[in-house]
Structures are given as structure tokens and as C-alpha cells.
Length: 295
Image (cartoon, rainbow, N blue to C red):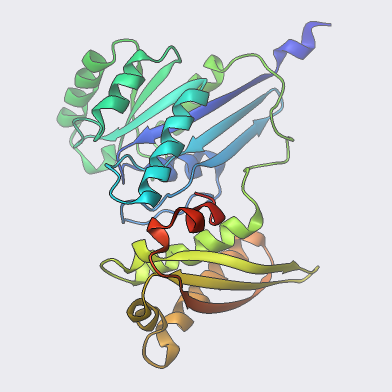
């Protein structure tokens, strides 16, 4: 009889400063690039759920934007995603690198200290550090969070990822699954199309361009052999539109080629992708526009 209670399910929130490897860690656990990863800060703008399913467990990871002091309306909304993730969590992962001393937000650090949920401090990117420094950091974080499980890891190289995951599985509560067992994320297909295009923009363009861009997919038609996609790249100013398009449209063409390749890998199908660029003045500071975009 008692078999029903043998199933475990829980929410795990991943929190930390920008660029410490939160998205790389979640992608390593899922084996799929659900969160976009680039060397630029603020790559993750939304809270993204990644779901790891097994016969008797379901772990729902929440990848959150890196913690920053908000300087415009969109960033306020990004930080609210982080605060919500803390409230919902059965387990909190606070991710740092060996170079990090503290969170950029002292209030949030105090919130983490007060939480009753089990806490993991993951010291990431140990492949780029010395053993001496890593040992020093393990001791340092154990004094800051005496009850935490502290692990040195390399999300990129997979070091200690399965050990961390096994410890998490032990600590999540007994509960039925929250999502269907074949589901790996809470986001719709269009979200991944938008993120794939945005990743190419983050990699190709400099200065403020990547941060002034949003992508909207207006059409997503799936046939047995091909997916037809029509997406719009929103920018804040006319001058940015010219930079995105580039000389004779070459820059935009390259974004399209690379995004199409990555989407073909993701969906396992041929992709037809059409891209347009539109100006939406100061969209990052416009509350109404941000709501429409899901912030």
C-alpha cells in the first residue's frame, strides 16, 4: 500500500550573482540547453523552470536572473523573479565562484540566512582556480552558512554535478509530481525560439545593443517535417535597428543562419526562420510593454 508516498518532488531555486554559471549548471542537470548561456551578464531575464524526472522523483529547478541593483524597470521585474524563487523553494542553491566574496544584494543574503529550507552553496568554475583557493572558499562559506551543504563544482565540465544532484534528491519532500513526467520545462516553444535568437544577438553585438533587444515570435507553425517561424527583433532606437541589420542586411542574415542551426538541433526538425527588426521606443522602461513581454 504505502507506495504512493515513495515519490519525491520539490522545487529547487538557483540564485547568485550574474555570470557565476547558474544556467550552465541547470543545463548540465537537464542535458539540454534550456537556459541560454553567454559570457555577458544578465543573459537570463526570466525565471525558467527546468524539470528533471525519474521513476520515483521529480526535481523542478528554477534558473533565475543574476542578482543586480536594478537601474531600469525591466531589471526591477527581473529581481522580483529572484525573490519569488526564494519564497517557493524546498531547497535553495546559492551559486558562487572561487573569486566571489558576497551577493551583490545584502538584503537577499539576509533572506537566504533566515530561510528554513535546506541550503546548498556551490562554488563553481573550480577548473579555473587553484586547490588552495577552493579549500579556502569552502571554509569561508561554511562560516557564513554553517548549516549549508558546500560543494566545489565545475558545471561546464560536469565535476561533482551528480553528487550534488543525489544530495538534492535525498532532501526533497515526499510528494506527487507537480508536472507531467514527460515535461522538461514550463516554457512554451516560442520562448526557446526567442531565447535562441537573443543568444545570437548577445554573441554578435557589442555595447548596449544586446541589452536593448527583445525578441517576439509572431508565428510558430509546426508540420511533420518543418517548423515555420516568424520572429520580430525589438530595439529601442532607429540607430540600433541599422546596427542589427548591418551592411546590406549581412549582420541580420548571420543571426538568422546561426539561430536556425541551433533551433534545428533543439527541435530535431528543419526550420524555416524569417526575421524582422522593429523599433519600440524605450520598451525597457515602459510598464505596459514589459507586461506584454512577460516581465
